[in-house]
Length: 179
Length: 273
Ligand SMILES: [Zn+2]
Image (cartoon, rainbow over all chains, first blue to last red; front, top):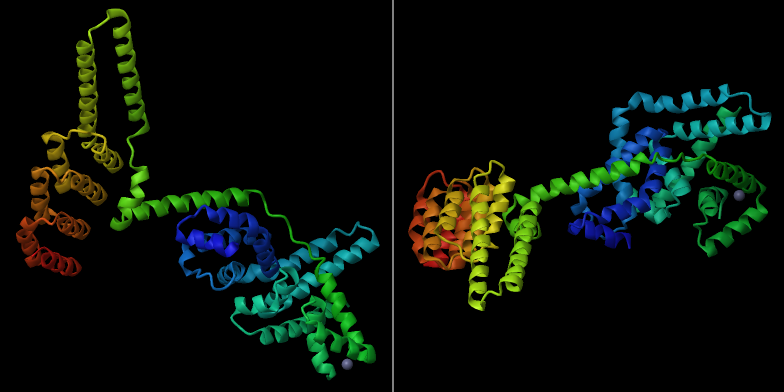
């Protein structure tokens, strides 16, 4: 279905990109947001990804899924973004965390939850992009290992190992922040 | 199955991506190994907590911006296509219509013709012959108006307007010498390549006229643009115009002719000889 739409875009029916936008912009935003931690930057990146889909529509062969191709482009956009915003990207989560703590009027339990969430974000942000990526793709985007393997250009086995290691790392960071 | 393998499979277990058979083996191990069960619980807790990280809503402007971007992209794409000769003819056709305002002027004029005719019949009781003459006069005026409009539009500084003017020839039933002269002048002198290409296409439609064929042959040595040269060569093959062999040879010998064009010319000459 999505493949057929994208093939139409490739043949020159550019309006079909509107349907793909409606179907995928939220999911794409989710990926970019959890990878970068920056809502504004992620909105810009969503535009860039759709622009590149139009511009490089000829590179979509229809062999893999449209979704895999979209994530493939999104990763490139994300890499460019990271290159441009090296400093601010790392500061985001800490600033966010401090903000949450400052809103200390909330009930104890709510505060605890907020703190826990902030710790989790920070732990996720501390992971190397390779690890964060497999977690975001499998946990938030609910991609199957097979699809993740296609997006990353690797094997299912390698994805399995990477998810495991990423979880180990996350646990380590999370519990050290929590204490 | 050892504990290390089990721990490696835990995320898959939580992901519900584990095939049933493997899942059964894992469950068996977990039932008998407190260490792995503890690991599972810790991993599961974290896995579930991840879900609590919210994704903010995008601003509605993102959608507006996307459609604006799509619109701009399409417009640019159309402009790019228009400059390509092969795509040109096909893509331009639906777009190739007289300006809406001018069309409206025609419609009004034709309505006037009808009203005048009806009026005449009803009140003046004109004999059928006189009526027909009047209609013919009015029709001639419509043709004349079309021609005048086309000729004046060809002088327009905007290339888009000149393109429209050229497209008018499709609607003009009897093309006279003035129109042919104007089109040939445009083919040889218009500063815009697209206008020259579309003019060439319009002239090919009129190639039944000996003057048009002669003009096209002469145009061969007057064109500087490789695009138009190649298009003209194609036209010569299409028309099987053997008189073009001589100017084609002249063009082939010229030093400033593009190498690709030369290859095309040589091939054209072979096809015509
Ligand atoms: Zn065990």
